Image (cartoon, rainbow, N blue to C red; front, side, top):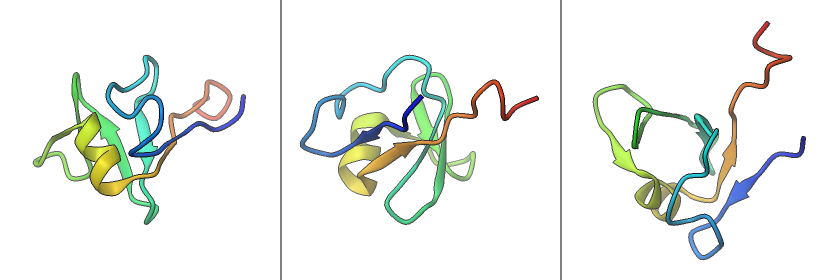
Length: 69
């Protein structure tokens, strides 16, 4: 499976795709998903559209089944 990337002006920038639970921003920082919001620290949460607009482009960093065993 190829890695997906989302840009502020591109498709998918408004709503996080199903199944995506982690992404890396343009600086390499890992963001993880709660139910509807994203965090790097566990204490400050932002929405997907804010994450992509402010920290994008973001790339999929969701662990695959092969790498989580």
